[in-house]
Length: 252
Image 1: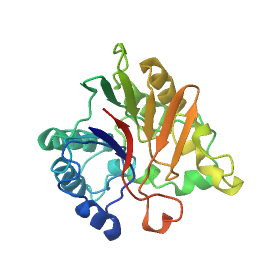
Image 2: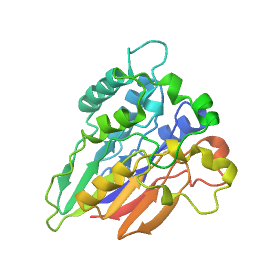
Image 3: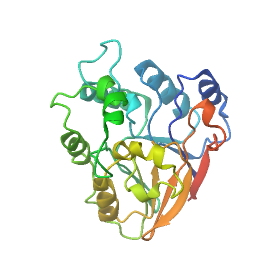
């Protein structure tokens, strides 16, 4: 049994949608998929993705990304209401959003957001980051409170035992996962990439492997005894630095 990972599939782009539909219906019947967020801002596309992938994989795991929680066309009053709708669709389609143990492996989805623990936002990001307009929160726009809402929901008190633990989140758990050669002109995005609270939870869990997304920069790097992997599918114009295919990250 193989465990594959992917994130940031953004199927609103026709090329990405076609890739989703072309995934083999036979090759992965006994395998697991971890989908680390950012399917689409349209819930009908999220449901279609869940239905498509659960027909092709033995198990599908998922956490929402920021794009998934955009509230468009007034379909939901806020992003938490949309999250609940996504969770209901996941239950109906068989997508797993809770910790799940099989044989000697424990897979743990971790909800998250960004809280500026990677740096303070400048005016450019405050004025142009779409989340600040497209996401709506019943408790206001305090990113620290938003992040805490998500991380407080995570299940991290399980006993590791002799199990291999794979955790996954959409958002980055530590900023040093970004390559050292990112141009200074692009580093203004760092404050909205994730939260140190996620890495704290990863270490409390005793994770052996952590999958993440959001940055659209494919990485496989060890940090303090944990292997971190980003396998973002990304936008069509990012072909030069994303692999744009499923990645096997573990075998049972």
